[in-house]
Length: 153
View (cartoon, helix red, strand yellow):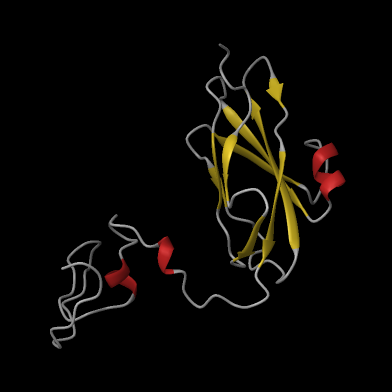
């Protein structure tokens, strides 16, 4: 059995459709990687053949602990297909990744409720403020006095 040498588990998943115009690309790192080279573009062959010298497609290098990338030109064009690739890098080798794709929605997502978590700073009631309020992150919010609750109470 051999350890995987390329990034995996792309999110959005390969071939995904109706992806919001401000995606965060995420992946799982291989076991031997130290850094990730990120590639993104609208031409499949361009992304597949890109190198770190490919202006407009090469998006830079991420540290090992950063397994995500937010496109700098976000919001992306609607109803467009994007291709992306993650190459895994360590001191001795670079492992070229697979090319993945996603297609952005032909509509605007006002709020993607699936992006909320139970982590401080990304809880639903910290965006959609309710009657109970919250104390973290500072300075907090005392609530609006209605007694309403957003999320699980």
